[in-house]
Length: 218
Figure (tube, rainbow, N blue to C red):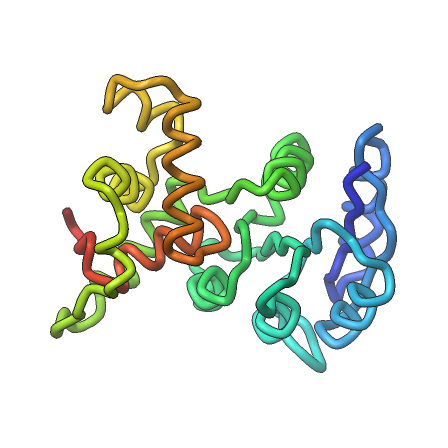
């Protein structure tokens, strides 16, 4: 069973998402929270696998709660929920270690699948989110961004795979482009994350642009 905690300041949202997820045979809603502080306390008490985290909440917003939850060694995954795809917090939430981003008006099936994907250790980074990240970097002064020495530990093929991840390609799309098996791509992705000390694909995208490996507009 995948244990889920729902953090949202609107009771109707918590109830609606809770009913939807509870109807799934492999999902268990262990609790909810109305603000970031409650989300942190409930996570520590209930030990969920995934926290559905609203961004805009009173007392403590979802961004700060995500930062505090995703400390080194933390196993919980955070899936960011928001009403606005242009939310300024999305980028920072991904940098803080959130494993995915989903609009609240997404189809019910998408929410259920998102929880499963994130719980499975993958990142939910839709092309629209990747475009937002690229736009974020494109709007910034280029400046000089020295490449982290960690990049030198990647093989040429791993570097190539990382570039494709940064452009929003799925494992299946990367496999087709490089003419290799999808399992081979998964192996490369796992090694990349381990070598760079990243949690998932979402952080890999952020890392790629911040390090200068990939430039916005490429």
